[in-house]
Image (cartoon, rainbow, N blue to C red; front, side, top):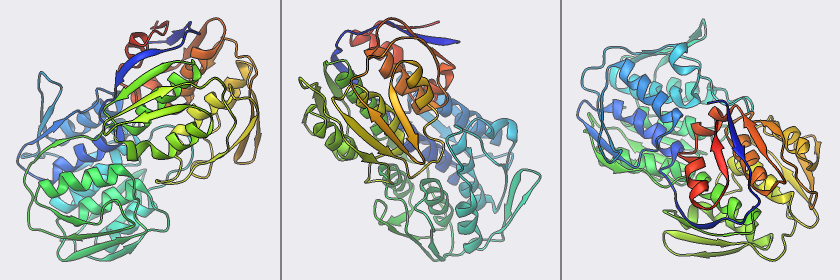
Length: 416
């Protein structure tokens, strides 16, 4: 798979169903390691990141069965290894999420420092701080995190930053610790609450997920559980922008309106009409797009994973808007690619000044990371001529059947 080709300026029309959330599925897959009995997971998105996590679980000894409807059954009864090698973790940041479950259940793990998109530094120091507070001995040797304990004990843990991954890893480890663990300044993303729902179905006692203080009362053991992954709010947002940037009318199905609230608010400011039900959002482009300013923040602020897509939309607005990125320092690498298409964007430190209403022209561009790739596809939908997006493998880490879904809405798009 070498490139995605977009040849479309037509408005998109129709409906699109949103897949299960990648960022919810990955920690829940890791959490199946906490029990020896089977877990059945529905709406697992068919993504390369998910395939990589499933391969890591297989290498640890899990038995995995994919059902005809795409559901996945995982049994972690006979775990043969407590180690994930660099070859296994180098492509996936979320691979480090197996550390907490392995440490909790087997009191030992050795995990290679993980890889993923090169959008900025994402150290695991907060994960390790949490493990240490729970009683583990932690060291980094030769590119591996090594942790062991005779048993974990509940503790009060304050996170210096509300890290999603650290919150998830500590929460999973604490489920089998003795006594109560309190995580303060915890991440409040919807994916945290979804993980807690799954853990509680396994028999854990997790309270407060979705707030900045989470309390976990440790239990002796957990059982497998059945669970359906929440919809992907970032995929939903990307199709919302696709409708607006093409001047179309698209119904986005299988959503949680509260999860897309920060994006919907900004799109309404830009003149986009959005009508919501309990599970859908109808997106209709207004006659004119207006500029807006955004600042990325942890949930419930504007999501960093949507800023590149909204930047593409802002190139069509009648005026100048400013994007301030506070989460990842390298999140503007896509800007040079949009400028190759004719966008007028200036980077000033951690802010991008976007001057709209410049015509976009199709050309060859490079998907430097997952969300950058999505932004370039969106820009291609609004550009004159043909846009060829190189390194599309980044895109397929986070978007299930993206070309097929856009084609069903009327886009002229293919994969070569």
